[in-house]
Length: 156
Image (cartoon, rainbow, N blue to C red; front, side, top):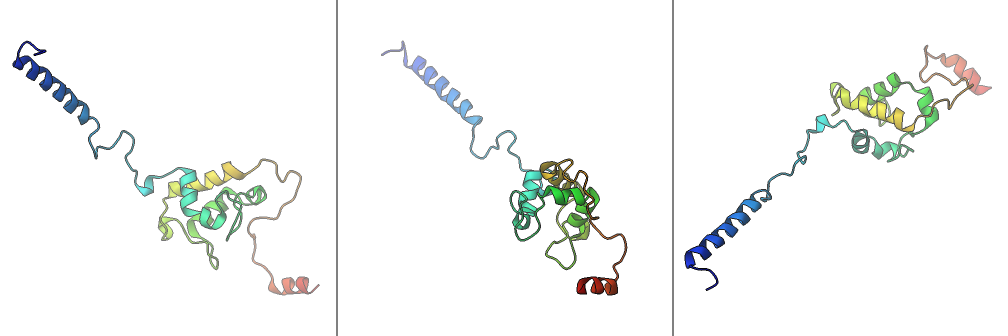
């Protein structure tokens, strides 16, 4: 025999088996890896994730438009201020396919998520000074329109 006695062979065999058992405990099936825990959908604040899941279907993966306006248009972002963008995301736009996304309006997004989307849109696609020296129209009318005046203007 290679070992002085059968008892010594059994001890070595037992030690090797025990080491293998202990090494296997750190990689047992079903044990989550560090950092692999899922976060609740309402906790997601990453712009890319939120935009992809809620906006890209209509506004395009890169904000270049599709079924809806291009949010990645720097001219649009120069005219529409942060308040207008948040309001549209929160409440939607009546008479269009833009639904309300805020939980307070029946949607699924928290106020923090709406802020993350609005901020992400602006920081990703706006360009400073794009309308430098121009006099752009306001994003929304400041007063109600005059249908008769509009009809006359259109007829002209």
